[in-house]
Length: 428
Image 1 (cartoon, rainbow, N blue to C red):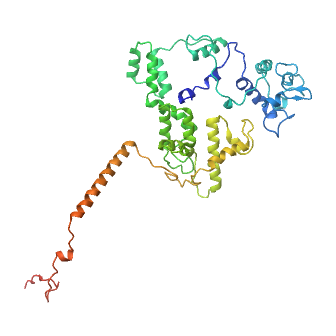
Image 2: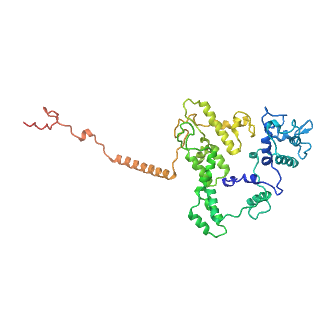
Image 3: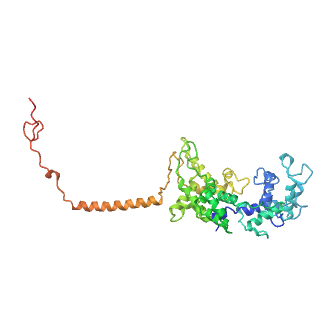
């Protein structure tokens, strides 16, 4: 199971991928962008605007026979209508049609030609394709990752830049991993370290720094729409910092990505969930909320659930799900039914429609730092002990009625107060 650190780099092979030949094409990387920009408006998911009942985003439709003709015939350019149409000199046949104001460059046409010749292989949306570790190029002198970079640079007629000096190197890697520049003392120590693994030790130290998790977390917190305020109207403060700290800690302890996912989406539903797992589910409480007078509860609850479903799709599926709130998605493979099936999970959330502009909106859990909890337990223990001592002391005391302990006063007639001690006589 991948952990968070390598997960951040999973996209690199897709960005850098080229084979030794340099021309093996990927549908998602090389072909889909061309078709999406120039063809999908008329030959995509939107059935109302689709022409000739042809979908170029769907492999079965694109390769299906239509009265003996094929939009795409793998390996055969002469039979492939797509190739013939994009090169046609006839304005009534050429694709894209002139009225679309779209044109294909010579490089794009060559890419489509080579793709058909290579078999016109389709791929599902990239987020549904399992990551595959590609075989690195043969030149591994500088390491596997650099081998991919070097292969692409050679394809472009380029080469690596000269190695950076040590002072530049420590500045770059420290900024990359912590978001902060290195301390002058750290620079001096690195420059003085002449061991062959000096850089590896530097990276290891930076990864162990608390600043690493803080720096990495801020990108995820942006995706999670984290904020310390409600985000709307009065924009009052709300208390969400425990979730923020959980994300920071998740990066610092290199939490496995499956747990990172489960605990945020449904940590509170894990049987016997620990307090930290419940805090992690605060991901679902980061959305904008409102306390505006006159708001319609049903509308706000819809908006909250819709936003949560869309954000979860974006962060974990790489899909812009919110379009399917109104119709089947025109670009990403999400139907309206798919969308509301996920929406239903989030509509069952327990928070109210109005946040009432308060700091803590129910349901809430209160936490204290571990040292404060220890102090509280010590005070509770001391209180219990003192209560026991007090109860024991009470049992040793004999009770005496106060009325019997003080004799009643003797009254004397004629005195203003009625007490035995008269007022002093007035001076004459």
